Each structure stands twice: as C-alpha cells, then as structure tokens.
Amino acid sequence: MSDKFHLMIVGAHCGDAEIQAGAIAHKYAKAGHKVTFLHLTAGEKGNPPHISVEEYRKQKIEEAEKAASVLGAKSITLDYKDAELKEDDETVTRVAKLLRELKPTLVITHWENSMHPDHAICPKIVQAAWLKAALPGFEIDGLPPHSLTRMFHSENWEDMEGYEPDIFVDVSDEFETYLEALSHYWFIMNSRDFRYYDYYKALGTMRGCLNRTEYAQTLKFPTGTNRRKGSGIPGFDL
Image 1 (tube, rainbow, N blue to C red):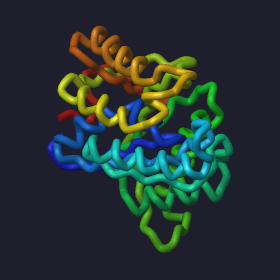
Image 2: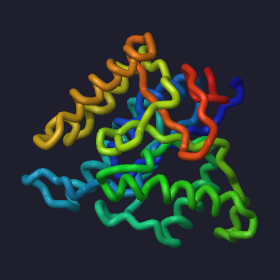
Image 3: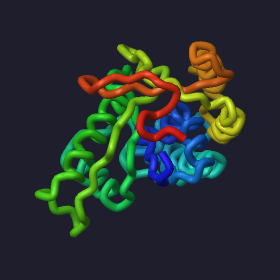
C-alpha cells in the first residue's frame, strides 16, 4: 500500500499496546506511516512498594512516552482508573471523539477473551467507539464522522483463551528496537509476578519460527469476520 495511513494501537494499560504490537508499530513507523499508542489507563495499581499509586501513574505515562519515542510513535494516556475500566457511554464517546479527531485508518487492540477485566472490555470499547465515530447521526463536538478501515487483535499472555493467529508479521528487522522500547518500562524489567521481557522475546522468537523468519508478531481478525493468512496486515502491505 503506497498511501500513508495512521495505525492506532489501543491498550487497556500503558505497556499493553507496546508488548503486543510494538514491533509491528515500529515496522510501519519506519515506512513513514503515522503510529499512535492509545492507553485507556496507566495501569497504575501494579505499583511497586516504594512509590504510591499516583506516583506510579506518572512514572508509567513517562515510560510510555519514552517507549513510543523509540518506536517512532506518539503516546496518549487517558485518565481512567486501572482495574475500573467501564464500557459506558462516557468512555465510548470519549474514544469515538479521539477517532474523529485523530482519524486512524486501522486499530490493533486486545483479543476478546482475557483473564483481566480491563483487557476484555478494551476491544468492546473500541468496537462501540468505531460505530459511534462512523455514524453521522451521532453529534460529537461538531467533528465530522470517521470510520476505521479495519480492526485487529494482538497477542497478550493474559488474553490467550481462543487466540489463534490469523496473520504473522515479519518483524525481524524491528525486534531489537522493540526490545529496547520495552526496557523503558519498570514492570517489564522488574516484575516478580511475571517475566515479561523474557516471555515476549521468546514469543517473538517462537512466532518467527512458525513464520520461517527470525522474529514475528501476530494478529487476529475479530470473531465473525473473514479470515485470511499472510505475511503482513492485509491491505496494508509494505
């Protein structure tokens, strides 16, 4: 696809979008496409013992901005509270307003099934916001309607129920930069609950093995849509 487009990756918490599709984001940013990470919450309640929840919120927003900069993207963090995300009219309208303002071409977000309630709600918010942003009958601050071209789900260790990849994207040339971006997050490098850095490095390696490339990240079509397997994002090949 020769025309430049806008890829938005929506995560429930700062860090989710990057670990799931950060290498894909960098691949498209390098090719000159606009990339935005939208974090619905900071994910602040997993704060380390030495700082408060509010201090950790500020830290994670700063970490998100650093990671996005490494990947050639922009970071936006909304002020919803971690572990309290809701699919209500206010949240859907706010995200719909952002879709109309920023005009992304396609969105990548969490898979539909997750052990984490925020993760499971996130794609529902995106889907509802897409509809609201696209329909001219909804008035949102005088902004014109805008519709996405596609929405995809990406791979997160907490969202694996029923996740079977439809698309493998070769990110061999982007993977070291992706790992560098991840290293800016305290929880990825220091969590005692889960070895995030090791897991996502191994996941990229494993998906690369299946893709016959050094590294790969995967995407999945929403339930009920047509499936096609390939080496890149359908309709957005570089």
